[in-house]
Length: 182
Image 1 (cartoon, helix red, strand yellow):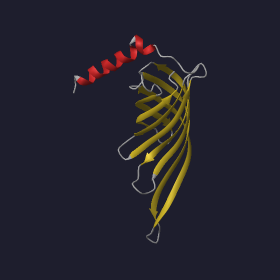
Image 2 (cartoon, rainbow, N blue to C red):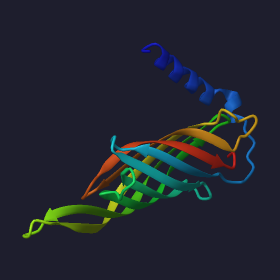
Image 3 (spheres, helix red, strand yellow):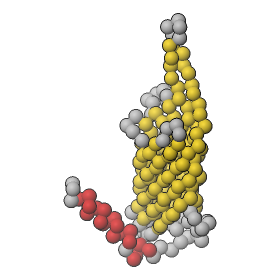
Image 4 (spheres, rainbow, N blue to C red):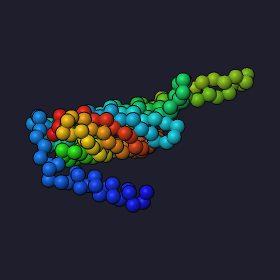
């Protein structure tokens, strides 16, 4: 296993930097891609994100909407956050890969439900809601193994993080990407 991982990384690096990988014909004067990502921050939580990225301007821009929180089985989540991200960054694209990094601002809406005992021995549910500004970062590494057949599709990983005053978090998501091959 220790030998296979460096060999796989070397193979991926060779595919991404090979001169043939840069010979892609764009279908638009700028690049756009949408990513649907699913992942986790810790074993009991789920992270979902839907993002739109574009290179219409000098710097690539990203707008995404995310859910981070408990993954209840058949019930309501006790803690969750809905977050809107506005980011700018860098991107590199080739025939068989797409890499991008984004940093920017986020605005989250966090809900936490808990039960507290009352004086008569019953439990009362309390819901606390907060609006949370923060700083966010995202890094994407997408492979396009079907590039000769379907160059618009990619599958990869997305690293994410959000720094704020209430509940900073980071994690890893698997991303399915649809783009205009630029």
